[in-house]
Structure formats: C-alpha cells, structure tokens
Length: 137
Image (cartoon, rainbow, N blue to C red; front, side):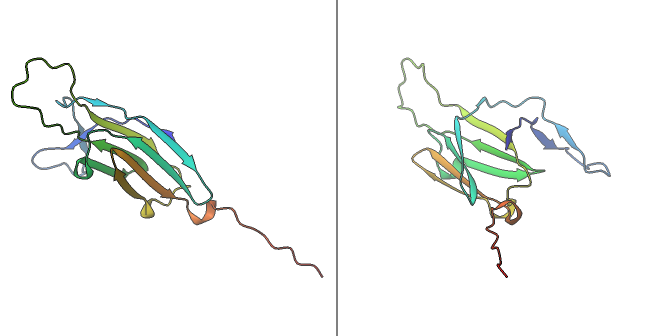
C-alpha cells in the first residue's frame, strides 16, 4: 500500500459531457494537513491507525474509489464567546493511499474512538497464506 496524493475533483456543473469527465477543483477554501498514520499487517488484514484529534464520528469521511483510499476529517472546536487572543486552530485532515489487489475492498471497515481512527482492510483470499498438506503414500 503506497501513499497517493490525487487532486480534489468536483463534478462539472450543469450537464457533464458524454464521458462523465470530472473537472479539477482549483480552489478549495479549507486547509488540510496529513494526519500521522501507522500501518500494521497481520495474517488476515492491513490495519491503518490515524490520529485525527478534534474529529468526531460524523466528521470522518472514508472512501475507496479507483483503488485509492481517501481519509478526510473535519475537526470541530467550540470556542468560548470572548476570545481575546488565539494562536491555535484545528485543521482538517486529508490523506490518500493507493491500494493493491491484496486488499478486499468490499470488506473494509472503520471505527473511531477518542480521535483515533482505525481502518481494517481484510486481505483478499488469494493473498492469505495457505498451509499445504503433504500426502504420504
């Protein structure tokens, strides 16, 4: 699984042309930062653990499209009413990874707890190790 950064796209306004082409999003007002991630592998799956402080369950958007896993997180923070000086603001998160055939994309699941997102990507059956029994005659 390799990290992949792809340009944000938006559907063309009005009638898309015959090919259903997407246009490039040239200006995105939101600022994004890449969340730190750890990637683990066990016998059955790949596990991505991403730190998304300030992002609740409803603020996480995980998609798989064209073999690219996209993680977006919108951080929320309610400020006190009378802010006199501010040096800290939460940023939104954005990161992408190129998936291989090793991942069974239809069985990807995710959970979020205390700002830590865990994505479990089961391996496809053909990539799991198999024990071959030897018959003795």
